[in-house]
Length: 210
Image (cartoon, rainbow, N blue to C red):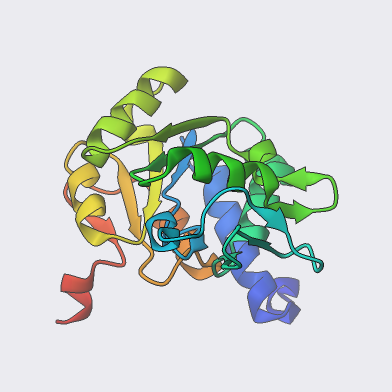
């Protein structure tokens, strides 16, 4: 009897994914995430007009509140994914980075320091290199590749804005489009399809329309 078939579907899916990754000649060496609209919302510019820094952790520890009373929260399965990247031995050698065009870099860095993943673990404990400035995302990803001493094809990147995904895919990065924020489904799909051929992206809306 195949004992794997007795496992719940989600566990079978995870086992299949992890087996694939372990059997691959190369897994992504670098995981890179956009911030606004991918990791959290609202976007920092939406706090203009009385909000913004300083940010405080709310009583439930799950969200942040700015000086204007606006709530900032993590999207989708961000906490689960960050915890997995930090604690799963499968990713022990991976480097975790940020590539963001956020309008308020200092606010973003403060949120990264204060967003709790679990007791004793914050976003700042997960992210190792943060490229937060204006410009085409290819600039950010090239800087990350240089900093991490890897080829661009060894990077997987998650962003809610599809044009950014198209841009970086053309330089060899495996890009995952996350229109509603970071989810475990798209995270797993990105890993299962890594590495992609240059010019292709995961969850391409053009292909979904066909």
